[in-house]
Every structure is written in C-alpha cells, then in structure tokens.
Amino acid sequence: MSGLKNFFKRSKSGYSPIISSKLETILGFKIGSPVHYELAFLHKSEHKTNAEGHPQNYERLEFLGDAVLGMIVANFLYHKVPEGNEGYLTEMRSKIVSRAHLNELGKELNLQQFLRTEDPSSQFGENVYGNLFEALVGAIYLDKGYSTCENFIFQRVINPHVDISKLESKVLSYKGLLVEWCQKKRIHFEFVSEEDSGNDPVKHFSAKLFLDGKLKAKARETSKKKAEEKSARRAYYALKNNINS
View (cartoon, one colour):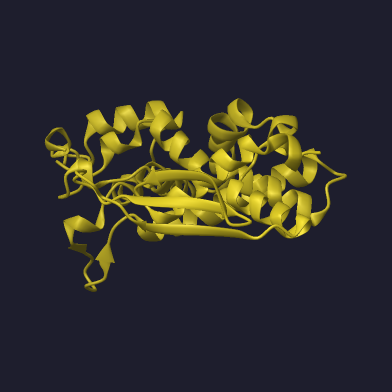
C-alpha cells in the first residue's frame, strides 16, 4: 500500500490530478465533486472524522451504492423480462449483484489501487473489491445523479456481463440448492465444520458434508461459510445427474 500514500495529496484544485485522470478513465466522465470519490476509497483504518466527529470512511457510500445498484438492476430486469414474476426477478437480481460478481467487477476495474488504508493489503479478503465497487456507485450517484450512475452500470455491468439465458442456469448457492434437494428427497444432511489453520498464517476452516450419515464431500477455506459452500459445490457436481433428474 506504500504506493498509495500519495492518493490524498492535494493539488490546488483540491484533488490529485493523476488520480483524477485514472479514475475518470474508469468512469468515462469528468468528476464533478472529488470529495465523494475521496470518501469512496477511504478505509476505516484511517480513523478520519468530520467536523461533527462522525467517522469518515467508505461504508456509508457502500450502503448507498448497494441500494442504487439494486434499483438500476431491478429496473433493467423489469423491462427486459416482462413475463418474469416477482420471485424470478428477485432471483435474477441477486445473481447480478451477488457478492462474488461485485468482487469480480471491483477487481476488473482495479479499484484497490485507489484505496487509502493503514492496514497491509494482505489483511484484505476478496470482498474489499465489491465493497469499493458499491462505494464508487454511491459516489457517482451523489456526484452526477441517477442517469449518469445508470449509464455507468450499463457500461460496466449489464452490457458486458449480463446474459439472461446464462444467468437462469447460474447457481447462486450450491449449499442452498443441495439443502433444498435433500429436503425434497428426504435425505438427512449434515455439515460438520471446525477450525483447521494448520501451518497457514491465515485462519482456515474445514467442512465435511454428510448425506444419510455418509461423507459425501469436504473442503477447506478461510471461513466456515466458504468451506461449507465449497463442500456443497463438490457434492453437487458428484450428484449432478441425480439432482437434475
């Protein structure tokens, strides 16, 4: 992160022209109010506060961006799939704005290059990319309004990445799909998870999936949730023909 220390160095205009140029290339338009974008990349480890003493970091913009992004995607799906019912539209929206997809978008745009933080980059997981993407959407909305924000989402998310037919077959949660199948077929399922750091500097968890008392799959990840999802995915592909029959 040492290369990012100059991010908030002020020019006479109040914003780094180098960073402004890089960001405007990603955005596709001229920045109007730099302060929103400064906040969009400010991590809480900086311990910044405003004049009233309130913490300043990207989390509030992340909240706003999540809502704006959801609205834009919902509006797109409403008009794109007029025959889709509420459940279908909700599921499709969840797939488009899933945490994994947002992480991919943030990584694709290399948003972490703009992050201002006191923490070493090794402490950040994949979710930082999606968090920054949502915060950036929030900043765009405050700076330029809904229309510009919508154009950005179409250019960066919907047009290049959203294929309705492919999304329909995309599995959002293998664990959820597998649990639903087990309940339908009256198969007893059990996830057994435990911490399993081994020699790794980062905490890891192992998860085993048992179906009717028999070990069907196991996995190891940096969180219990990820380990269970990975083991469920492995079990899904092992049982794919049975599940889809």
